[in-house]
Length: 467
Image 1 (cartoon, one colour):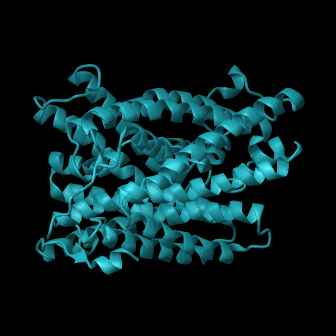
Image 2 (cartoon, one colour):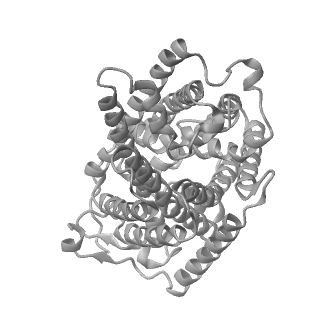
Image 3 (cartoon, one colour):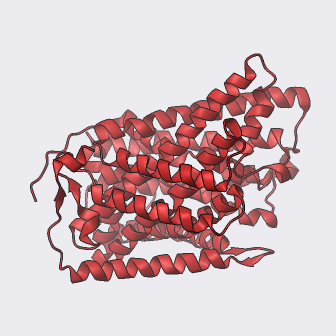
């Protein structure tokens, strides 16, 4: 295969905005606020004991091993190709499942703003259209494609800031919809357990930018800096944003899909030009939902393409644009799977909220599995490759690294369990069965790749790549 020169398009600013776009999810606000005021405790507690360690581990791996493929390359170096293949499959297929969820959220907000009569079928159709627009965004170079997540990150910061400012004014005039004090934020281990995995879900993604390390100008310096800066921004906005929604809406009335627009209308609709402001912020939110899908697809498709190039996934994933060197095969396959998921799940649910949560929980199980491998890879590479230069290193010795790793893996395992088992309701069989089937499909994909014997990756003609 002819090598295509890769342009160094990503600087520190791009990496910060890319990471903010990947992790800071407007849709997570409603899911976590639905926990109640104890969600404030969970954001702070998990932020300190999971989010910060995750950021530090990602920074060390990203600058010590700035390899194309990111999480796939780290697990491959630590545990070999077979386990790396499983990680890449889970990583890629999660995005293919999660993109429909985020685009259903897009459709739900669009319905509130512009088309109140749009039903579930119309929302599914809109989700399919968005899926294929995201596929196109994935086959252009990051010199162009990076602006989708960059602009999305800026819009997210604006939306979060508006919600926080609106909450301050609203609460000063109307009082708090939920009591927010020391007693109320104490952890609630009842109904809140169902939603705690959503907080962990909303904290992951620091490693995503490392999948595009070949397009970074200075990964050794910029990766740790961008992770630490973006991490501080993300944790602050998540905590304050969740508090803002709880200040305005009783926890029991928060809708997982329509909660955002409800909050915006409550804060701003009574102001001069308030409806126009709500519409503008709603459109910005719509863009962020789209940019979320594009951001994660960029990382997932590049990791899958790297695995396929090394013969660990079927060669269809390795098909690249001849002129741009972008992962056309992985992107198109993701579009096909996302479309099928939208259609199949659309036949099984009665509302957009049910559809959103079903897809969210299903993708959540698959999504968390690669991070277990990532933490264990960090620990092993510390042990077997400790002499390697690490421009950034997690503070503390190897004993601290082990304790940190095992604690974070335990949190991930607990979150996976809570996606599958809901206290008070029991096992969520569609989530469990769907997860098992997806993992089995991954095993079949790996066996298929082995039968192909690691054939060289093919390229698509330049005429197709420009479409």
